[in-house]
Amino acid sequence: MKSTISRRRLLQKAAAVGGAALAVPGPNAQGQSSRPAAPGRRFRGWVCRGTGPGRTTLQELTLRPIGGRQVVVRTEATNLCYSNASDVLGLPGMFGGPMAQMPLIQGHGGVGVVEAVGPDVRRVQVGDRVCVSGTPQCGNCYQCLRGRADMCQFLGRQGPNDLVPIAEMGDGTPVYASSHIGGLAELMVTFEEWIVPVFTKASAVELGMVCSCVSVAGLGTATSQTLAAVAPGSTAAIVGCGPLGLSAVQGARIAGASKIIAIDPVRARRELALKVGATHALDPNVEGDKLVAKVREMTSTPNNRLWSGGRDSGGLLGGSGADFVIEGVGADRAKPKVEAGPDPTGVLPMRQAYEMCAPGGHVITTSLPAGTISFPAVFFAIGGRTHHAGQAGGANPMRDIPRFVAMLDAGQYDAKALATRVVPIERMLEAYEEVVYRTTVTAIMTA
Ligand SMILES: [Zn+2]
Ligand SMILES: [Zn+2]
Image (cartoon, rainbow, N blue to C red):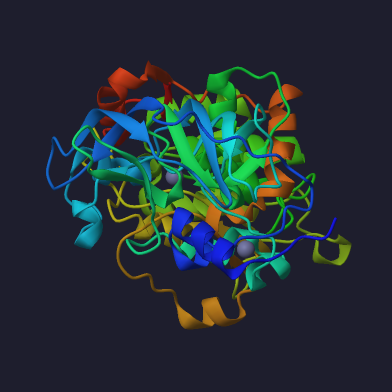
């Protein structure tokens, strides 16, 4: 069927969805019928505004009409990501600037059921169960086309001028969805670039866990082909066993690593790592400055005869070390109420991660440390360690998230073990306190 393009219609659509980069309408090649959300649909959402503790309150909201490529998702579950804790709880280090005064629903991910789609949406239909991915994937930008969907250029379109009002408060004040997601609410209003359909009967909590930014990043580092997928029979060290590291441990197990060394200061997390797939666990506080040497010793091969395919730990650059090192520590947003690590900035563990890697091996970093890192230059220049830096562990949402859900459905990925706290929407704040003080591995909010 031939479609007529009217400039006026395009402009109307652009106005409906705001933000220039996101508002470009596309043809509806699939003949997808749109169904507007019920006008005036009411829902509850946690809205952040201002500074300091108390900036986040549960509000009764009214949905605004949608258009273009917008998608309304009825939230089933959202992971309470550690990286969002400062903004939600109003802790020092929260994102300042003009965003602080915008009424914003935090939460950069979630799972749920599509309730309404704009007229240009092709990826999903009303009634589909979906992951609202922390990382968008447009499929058309330079990064998506070069195979780096984790760097999709839409990821950078989340500033104050890119966000569009998705709802309003009782007094008419417009409310925006952080990251175009706003997972801490009963409804998420996003764009189809952030949506991944998932066909599964998994429970809301387990699906919310495996589709969370942290699980996707952890499984991505270990099993996605984008960065450096762990090879069967290889040795792996996972530095930091929060929900991301514990997902990387599981990814390394699923990928068939022969030795998986989990490193974390928190005893409960080391124990959980052993339960979900680690073969060994180390406490960085106990090992101190011997940590790297310890990992090298543990990853030495039984064969050190160099004429027979062996390797040893001698020589200028050292022969042993883990074949794959996955780092997921980052800076503390608050002082933990459990065992603290050796460096609250997260820089030391990142440096150790690099140094414990074998020559010819791969280091994959995922965290948000604070400060500057330095290495001996020769070691860095010719030591043979390849560093992979990726967003979301390099995961390509449309390709990898359905695969991660399949791992859950096949019983390979243990989501339940990681969701150590599950709360209804009303109790989101108390669960976030547990997340930021690390007394729980992570928490899932159900709506
Ligand atoms: Zn996150
Ligand atoms: Zn893209």
